[in-house]
Image (cartoon, rainbow, N blue to C red; front, side, top):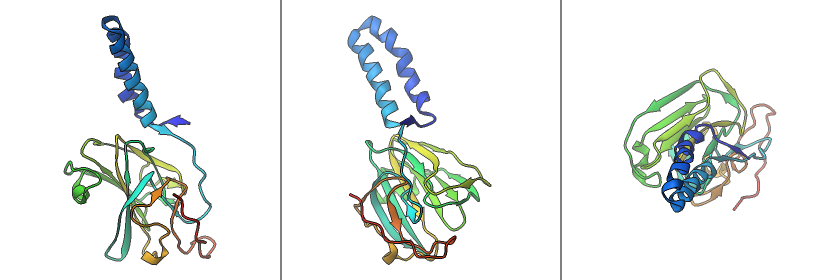
Length: 211
């Protein structure tokens, strides 16, 4: 199991402080080390078994949003503090653009979080939107325009909780979904929806729902 990039910038101060704090108070030193350890655990980056087809979850957590926006379906996943916060590509594609939009500072689970700071990773037929929460205002996209990505590939992370949405390709309908609001999903593993496979021209088979 690896550690997400940028994790050490948050853990390092506590590690540096621990020896000094330990001189003043053993309890303070242990507390600083524990804090650093928790930061690294929070930024853990486990390997995932990526399926060969389907639209996979871009984040760990629970489905909090299912709605249609114009001609496209949008599914949002709320990441709790204990979830892995590394985000993954729902499909293979080419990054067309990475756009940062400043915004409000609302809890990621609230309806108003749509107005929060966010980063949109546009891949043409689909878009991944990383949304900051009231505490987590640290979005770290890991891809650039022109970059080719594979299904389940790491595309960034958000430090300390938040939400990640995927705007589906136009041909995906609500009845194609294999998940619903409240469903727990795993980034890079859980299949969110069926769709026509553009490579093989076949229907992606429906997969068993994961708890």
